[in-house]
Image 1 (spheres, rainbow, N blue to C red):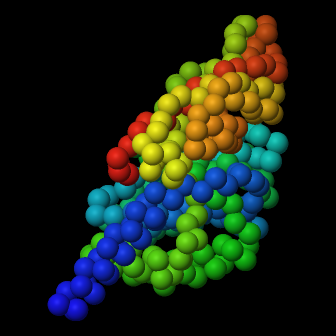
Image 2: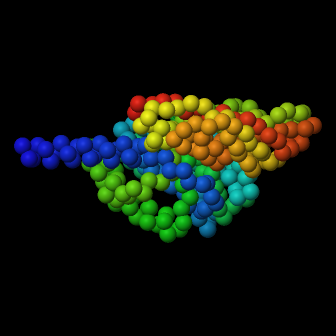
Length: 292
């Protein structure tokens, strides 16, 4: 009886650990760094800029299905807010940019690293590193060189080929503890030109549907928050203010989300981008469990 109880308790603890890893959504500020990382129970991403003018992206597929990442869905910004895009994935160092592919695909329980081909001037640091995959946007967290070295060391120790979900989660918890890097959310993207030759108001290009805070999740509370933002001529948010209030930290999470993770095109006057104001609406769905 004691043995059965111990096994049941272990299973419960592993289940709670899985929930913690899968639901982790730390509110970190996307600051400029040469190193960025994301980790959950299904996938690990690392993004690194090297002194050799390389952009290295590693994908570790922890799940049981093939995962592909399109080059057009990888974006990052300079410190002054300019959006940068890579041109291709280079599968090895012998290929040129024109020979690189437009997708990075990783089979289940495998890891691969790609160099990103690009034509822009190399930045020493980038911020707001985002990757869109399916209905999710993965936001990579900036790390210091020392933190990234420790992160990589622990990743190298993971047994990614293990088939048992419980053992995989247990391994993650032993290696990383409560240090979950990055965050993810569902998103909506508008395919419209961020520039204009005429006159128009600002446009929301990418919006997210953030998860509830832990308190709101327990209370099964959701709702909508309207956030007024001020944009500069690059579409960067310079100020964000909530126009209504929700309980349990949902208002604060909405302002954080819009200010740090939404993308906007600025307003235009006679073909010239100008500072402008815009209203964004954050919607919280009441979820019984994590769908990711």
